[in-house]
Amino acid sequence: MTSVVILISGRGSNMASLLDATASGALPVRIVGVLSNRPDAQGLQTAAAHGVLTEVVDHRLFAEREAFDAALAETIDRLAPDLVVLAGFMRILGDRFVRRYEGRLINIHPSLLPAFPGLHTHRRALAEGVRIHGCTVHFVTPDLDHGPVIVQAAVPVLDQDDEASLAARVLVQEHQIYLLAVRWFAEGRLRLRDGRVRLDAPQDDSGRLIVPQSPLG
Ligand code: GRF
Image 1 (cartoon, rainbow, N blue to C red):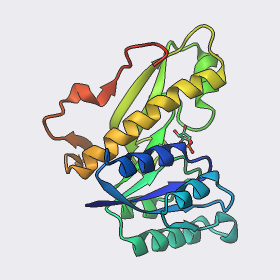
Image 2: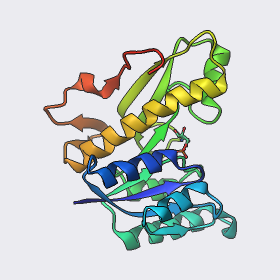
Image 3: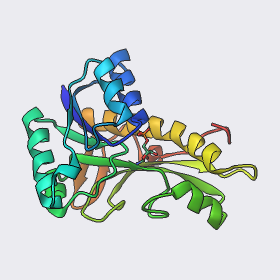
Image 4: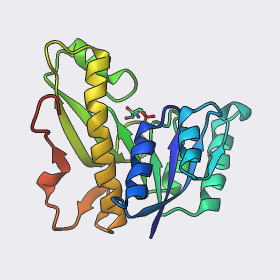
């Protein structure tokens, strides 16, 4: 069975939804560890409550980013996962780290990339007045919040939206598409080849954009 390590920095709701899906049998993977760069990440408690091994690699203990990346990679490699899932992991990872896990390192970002890389995506989407916002799961490349797109979900921006309401509606979709992407990987249908995402049938390409039926979906 595909083994997965999840990296978090905070709340861990994406992690929790993956853990719930494995517990219910909806997601055929084994989550072998949850790692955080912050000892106070709320998600660590959730993971421990699920009986999953947790470890902290505190970035503040490392003067250089390369040393942090190396310690993180060592911790990951001890768990020998097939897939590394970034779920609200708030550290920038260096080229060497990213290359080490090429094709098996994925991230979720709360915007329709390539729009709004970086922070405060919902605030920026509202400020720009975009009518369609959303979230993206992508393979990680050395460029921050870039990389071949695996699946996206579109979320309409409503006139009455504020940052919190928009974030909440996007988060519902984040949980859906992360589950999908991890399942596709576990089923051996998802691959990175020549820098592009390949998804084997029966899922066709249209299945890689999720458009919820209801605007409040
Ligand atoms: C999510 O919006 C994710 O897309 C972004 O950080 C947030 C993390 O939320 N990268 P959580 O920790 O999964 O609840």
